[in-house]
Structure formats: structure tokens, C-alpha cells
Amino acid sequence: MALKLNEKYLNGFINDEELGAMKPELEKAIATVVNRDGEGNDFLGWVDLPVDYDKEEFNAIVKAAEKIKNSCDVFVVIGIGGSYLGARAAIEFIKSPLYNNMKKDTPDIYFAGNGLSGTALEELLAICEGKDICVNVISKSGTTTEPAIAFRVFRDLLEKKYGEEGAKERIFATTDKARGSLKTLSDEKGYQTFVVPDDVGGRYSVLTAVGLLPIAVAGCDIQALMDGAAKAREELLGKADCDCAKYALLRNYFHRGGKAIEILACYHSFFTMTSEWWKQLYGESEGKDGKGIYPASVIFSTDLHSMGQFIQAGTRNLFETVVDVKDTGSSIKVPDDAANLDGLNFIAGESLDKVNHYAFQATALAHNDGGVPNIVLELDAKDEANYGYLIYFFELACAISGYMLGVNPFNQPGVEDYKKNMYALLGKPGNEARRAELLARLAD
Image (cartoon, rainbow, N blue to C red; front, side, top):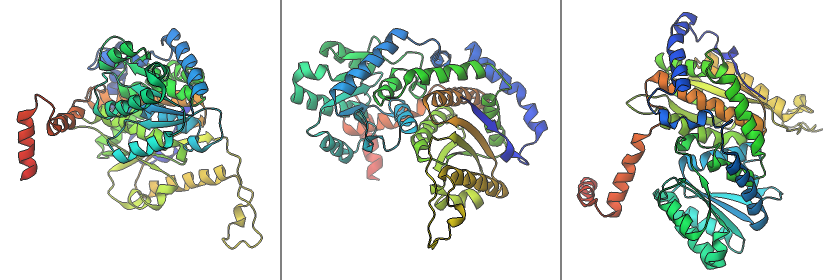
């Protein structure tokens, strides 16, 4: 298992002397992570998590996952941002983006509380009608609006369907270990609880109970996931000459050269939600103080027929990072057709993965010709161990890159601004003056 950086598609885009001049900054950023002496150092619990996690809780997660698998048809995971993206990304990568439609001995898994659309919630309730349901509500505080509303709806549903005693056996809360409204409610109601660690922020929490419980319910091997992350930690942490550090360095090198946008690309739809997780990780970690590389994503070859034109010939303010999954486990081949009306018999008998790989190579060369450098990250296989390695690789690179950029990679002060306005507009007590000010602005 490994994630390797291929520099083939960077030829002509890098000045070795300029890149070398940045090495002292890279080494300083790496030391800041290892020594835990930079801004946000109280949120570096994820660094040792793959080897220093709570084994007792890990075993409890495995047992709870088995209980859930044996007692419900639908498992609803309620959370927003880091409280759901990592789990969904892992399930879609390891299993399938069509997980719920596949034949399996595990429950369907749906994600709620990640928006405020009444339509989406009503549709999910319709899906749940007549089925046995379990719920995992994930929130450090229990007061974040989106998941709190969804949990109110599903708690009411479960208590009416099973009674309070029955509902408490079907509700699992992942929250603060000692305080907060969700922890208080869980203790009062008797829900089984799992911990959101104090020293791990939401976007870095996929390898905690936040991500592990839903991933385990989907039938994934979470021990292999942790083992992959542990191997990444062993091979990457504290090393300036590894591919993880090189990725962080290259991002900052291109940014300083005027490339303000990084496009994460993959040639498989099972990577779509991983791209969404990556966008939160990098966007929330680096986008502050008027700084940051804007994280965007595409899935090729699909988006070559939409965004391909811009990437090929639009504003030259971007670079691409391509995740190339070497072994997907797919064996489908292009069939022969006697009529050959589409003219594709020249690839009859070829595996679709091989055709897809040629599409990647052709695109990378074309984008190079169009002035777009491509950082290629080669992932060995589509499995739990490799995915755990990828998670740790991106998390560590993000921390290093953020410190090189000169920001605190672990806070998110801007996220609170919309919440303050929304609470005021909704009439939350204590926000009367702000509400009047906002309503006046909206009336203009």
C-alpha cells in the first residue's frame, strides 16, 4: 500500500533553484507539526491517532456496528461538514457510490443534517417509511442548526415508532466526552455514546468514531483503514524528502507563481465524495487571512466534456492534482461488435480501466501543452488500507502546507459569520439589534 508522487507531468513547470530555496520553509513547517509549537497546536491529535487511538472505544465501535447491521434496514447518519464528509467519502470509495442500490448484508446508509432543504429531508423520511431505522447523530456541541433540526425530526420519528425505550437502543451519539447539549441529552435518554476528541477538529476526524462507526456499518474493515494510516504516519511524519512533504511544497510553489486554484482530479466516480472531503480539508484549513489556494475538483472523463475546455485553454491561474488509482478491481472489457458502427473494434478486448488510464495520460499531456502542471499521486489500490494511507497523506500535507502559507491550519473563524446572521434573522433571543440591522440591509 502506498501513495506515490509522479513528477512526469511537471516537466518544464518547475525551476529547481526556486523550489530548492523554499526547502528551509518546508522543513520549518514540518518541525512545527512534529514539535506541536505552532498556531492551532491543540488540534494536532490526529497526528498520532493511527497508533494512539482508544482501543476500548474502537472495539465498542465494532460491536455497535454489528448491532446496527443486525437491527435495521436503514442507517441514518446525521452531521454536517467533517461530521459526515469523511464517512461518506470512505464508504463510496471502498464500497461504491451506488452502495445503497447494491445487494449486500448491511443496511442502506443515508446522510442527513448536512443542509436545510425540507425537500431532501421529506424524501429521506419517505424512504424510511415501513423500515427499521437506526440513527447516528454526530455533533460536538449538539447545537449546530442543520444536524440539530434533522435529529429532532428523527428522534421524534423513532420515539413514536419504537417508544422511548426502543428508540434509545437505536440512537447512537458521537459527541463531546463530557459536555454539550447532545452529551446531556444522551446521558438523560441512555443513548450509547462515542467521543469526538477535544484535540481533533471536524475535518481531521474521519479516523475517530465520527467516521469509523458509519464506515464499519457499511461493512468496511476499519482495522485495515487504521493500519493504512499508521503506515503513512510511519513513512511520512517528520520527513522532508517524502512525497507528502513534496506535495505540500509544490502546492505553495505554484501558488507563489500565480496559480491560485488547485483542481483535484480523478478518473473514477467512486472518488467524488473524497474530493468533497478534500475540498473542506484544504478550503477550511487554508482559506483565511486573505490567503489560500482555492480547492476545486473534477471527475474525468465526465468533466472533460464540461470543465475540460476551461482547464485546457482558460485563465492560466490553476494547477491540477490527479489521483491515479492503479488497481480498482474492475475486470470489465470492451466487447467486440460485428457491425462496428461506432468504429471502436480497435479497442475490443481491452479492459475499460486500461482505456481509462490512456484517457488520463492523454489528458495530462494535453493539459501540459495548455500550460497546466499536473501533480500525479499514484494510489496502489481501491481498498481500506490504501484509503487510510491517503487520508493521512492529505491531512499531513494540509498541515504542512498551511504553516508554509502562514496561516493556522486548524481554526475556521469565517464559518461562524453566516451562523450569526442566520440566528439573528430567525429571531434567536439576544440578537434583536443585529436582526434589525440585517432586515434594514435586506430592505434596501
